Amino acid sequence: MPSRIQKLLEGRDNSIDYDELIKKHSWIVEKNVNCILSPDSDGLLCGLLMSYFLT
Figure 1 (spheres, rainbow, N blue to C red):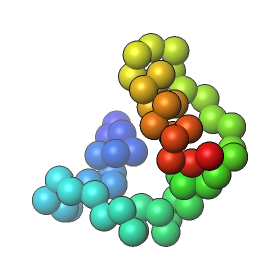
Figure 2: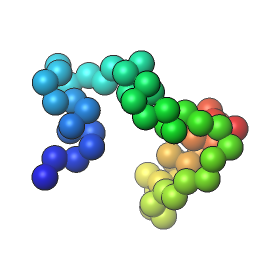
Figure 3: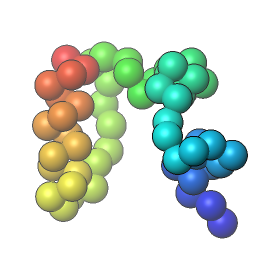
Figure 4: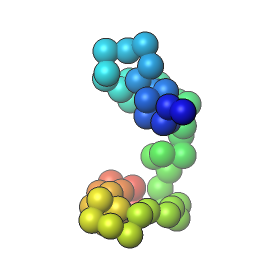
């Protein structure tokens, strides 16, 4: 079963169209919304990045 990222990249040159991504999934850039991240170093870094850009 392909992941969501693989579905987004399907039929493309392995680049992400950010405008289309935000249009279809506007929750990605919503501010002041709680989310669940993984408790490993990748999750911590992702949380820091999201906190910086979305608060």
